[in-house]
Image (cartoon, rainbow, N blue to C red; front, side):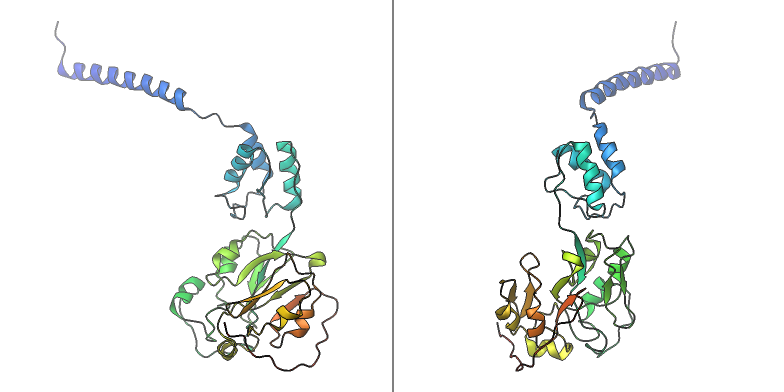
Length: 289
């Protein structure tokens, strides 16, 4: 009895397929990964924003990190806040560390009236693209470009570009400190800082690292690096580096002496009930570093 070539080919293919199926089954059993059901439970608790503020690829990746580590040390979900932290801690059977609430802060005071336009940009409305082409309409290569890349990056509608000032502004009630706007800003103008008691904060609203005389040509409220704020701070919270003052929010006690001392008005104090009374003083000379 002879078999036709077609039948032989079908039998060979059938036997080969069956052998491969058996091999694949045993390989799958050998290397299969049994996922901890706790990952699904924690993923359900997380907000699902996938904003990347936790430093992970998304909420699912964050849930896996929680379960793998077994505790919350060094891990936090800024979008979820304390409420989500408590739920995750309960699922993990550990204590949730109280984290200081943060908020995004735009460190630029160069509004349209303070940093007047010297040219007009009519290109792609993207900060990274515009930053690669020119310094900015005012000539400051360190200030907010006002094209709204941070606005597009924010999933919580917490940041807008004020059409009157041309600068991005943060709604602190909506901001969850996910850091998406920080990553979107090509100039590093936006920073996450402690919200502070009663939402009060003191910070240098300038990012210009040029020497004072040059910085002032671009913006009338630019930090000139004079160091008067650093000298007057009783807590050592202020440093001047690369012609720019910076206030360490972990050290600052919000006495606001620096606000009164700053000759440029580049230090901002927000949410205080009364403004600081400034005393008349001699103009400060920039520190050349």
